[in-house]
Length: 380
Image (cartoon, rainbow, N blue to C red; front, side):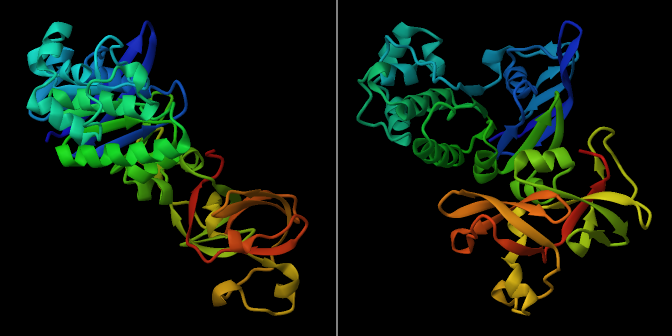
């Protein structure tokens, strides 16, 4: 196992910087998922780590080896890195076993050597490892999309890499197969003790399988933390909205509380400033802030029941007199998202369980018992 370290990495084409002072560290055997909008530099970061793109500045260290620094650019084949692309990129004229054998150091990138090595024990072990033990003689055209990606992963592992880079490997798969394969990939990387970096456009995927999640925008790494911290304490309002559904309300700061449309709530001040990498001072009393609440943290009850003095669902107390109207319902089976319009015309969303569905037109009381987050006003 090897730790991967990237320090102040700058990559550019012509006069444009694609990566701007990116730094990260992935511990031995951990999986980092990188998310961000298209064009933010995710794939460029992978290609630079792999040695396929030269950096303008910065360092890349893989285990104890310096792969990139001033005056040093270790060749891709010497970095002990495995690569799993989005389209599997299997050789159509080679069998499954031969494709895997192609990744062996002894094959030296030769199809003839790969054919000779196809029956080796280590190839059979990798076939069994990815659940394709009986398919070694098949050609890539005889495989499903999920099977092809398993072959690509086995080929990446064949060289005994310290780090495996996965560039949108599940993007072309249907949702059920995608979920199954990402679980398998995570288990395989853990079993092999390989450090991994996964690039994905699926935020839920990143949160569900990674040890660490990095959020990129415009060539910068805005946050790198555990999935729970990225979701529960996003570094910026933009990160909050990118990794999950978010409700923002204007409010005012009062010590460790905020006053907003939901009432006076306990709050934490988020002081990280991604633009300057320096902490912001907590606002003065009465300062304007943006208040973050996740839709699942909102509590709803029919307004009529609240006005009649009925207790809140689950016995929770403190229902505010904030009124809203359900204007749309997006049902997903296990839960639903309700679109609400407050009496002051503010529009928000609330997530409820399937048992808590309310029809369009229902008047509801909205509140929360959660501790909320406060950001500098206007930071979105």
